[in-house]
Image (cartoon, rainbow, N blue to C red; front, side, top):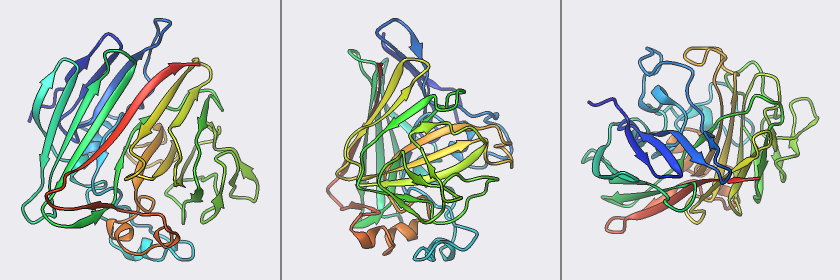
Length: 333
């Protein structure tokens, strides 16, 4: 298998795509002022590290697609109502075949690439295609995923872009509107979480803290090393991330009809085990239909989020391919 990247470029965007996970990475955008910016995260480890035992972990960062999304089993007692988070078995590899298998190229030009992944004959999903296209007019990348099903099924799904965290505390400002915010329904493998598990909030700037305080998750990083996850249900528009010290913003937009929520994953040196080693820094902004990043069966079964009318799966039907769109662009501020 060729482990070299496939380069895409226009006058406004440069990017690499790897076959493993069809992962988009090494992205640079040209701002109006003539400055190139690179807003996506990159790993702090080698892709040949023995601790990266599944595909997307080799080059964790950039953007990739997850079907089925999630798979993590909680190893402690979850908050009330989330018991199946611990009883459902962990799914391997995390984030399913799309994020980990080697895709095939079906078409390639200097500014775009289309890849395809065929699923085993026993799987309800038949194939997934992924087209990554760099704009000729704007510093923007458009991503289109098409999913074909053999039979009716419902699975959690997500796009998975990861932004880099700036070095300056509060140097990145998140702007987002949503119907309901939920903190993680348990603890995470980390020395520190900022949010109190199992709580609700209505503004990203007012998240219930671990010690009863209010934490502003709209200004990141917070400072101390931490690992945290919050879910924004019913997202109502694009999410913007302003790099305040660098005078540009990232605008993430997507098909919210089918992926109505977004997982915000703050990984800021919070996990000490390999390959993380207390060094990785990234901000996952993950458009999704899922119940957090739990086992796939957790999202497919009734759960506290779906019980409140928020869908946690993507419905797929045979002979009716499902198309999903996502775009990443930068603008000056």
